Length: 126
Image 1 (cartoon, rainbow, N blue to C red):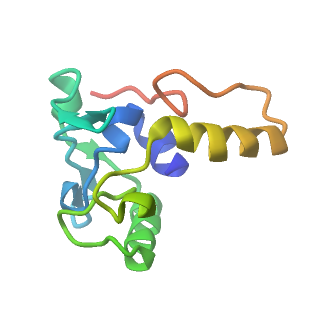
Image 2: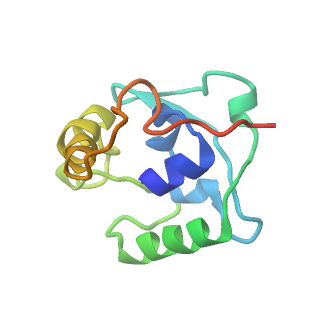
């Protein structure tokens, strides 16, 4: 999740709204077509957000491994499906931030805090 976010610059609302059908492994692209906020699925924030986002080959390989290991790997499943909802909803970003990312950053003694709308500094989109 962090690797995908760090290498694509997606907003967390876009990251958690990704479904397996949005991943084009052949062309190494993500088709960002929706965002999610408080379990409400909607449009992306801007027109630029709806453009295909390139993904690195190694990131795509790691994403493929995640798909193979995931209980929720059908095309219409969320990439980051929550097992607490039996895959009906993706994980809640704030819970992931609070329970996983911030403790990991503290353990790593990261000089940068985490928060805001991104998990990492976004890369520019063209």
